[in-house]
Image: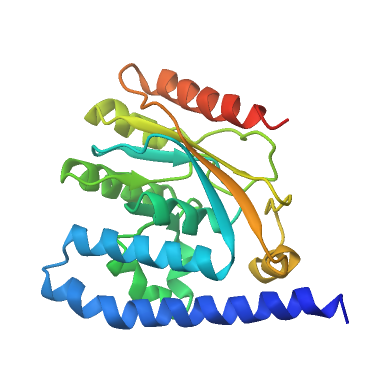
Length: 242
């Protein structure tokens, strides 16, 4: 029976998050359109959704560093889908996500509400379109969250970074904020397993603890140097846990 309870808890949490997402879209979408697709409404919705999901999952966050007050490119390491709840809950902004989520029920409606920028990494034209969308969001005064590794990793440090977004940072002179996410309670890295397998693997634990660190903004220099500085800052913070 004791082995069944964690899976039951994970299943209930999955249902609750699905309900939370549906209700968020139903309630917030009309306000979003009435406000003229206001960035303020998008950010408030993303923050509320992220914090509520963390509450349902009993994730306790230890916030480190100082969150930026200006428009920035926020670049965290990426280990789990939980990273989405974390970063939006504590620094809501437009976020870059894989185009496959457009096929998920309800999320298709949430994409516009959350100012989500979709990327198709298998298609060069799609990648260029994403870069243009990031550039446009930054130039219009918004911040953008993107995972420079391009996918999840088991850690403990980051894998290689994609270069495209750093070129945008160079051209627009937008500061980059390195962010390190470290789950303290369990090893929940997500590599090649499916979403459901990963979810049920660890969401049956009653509580999880995570450190969320915002580093000093990186600004100036060429794209290659910005990439190296950002990666170094994140890896230096993550190495404290080794």
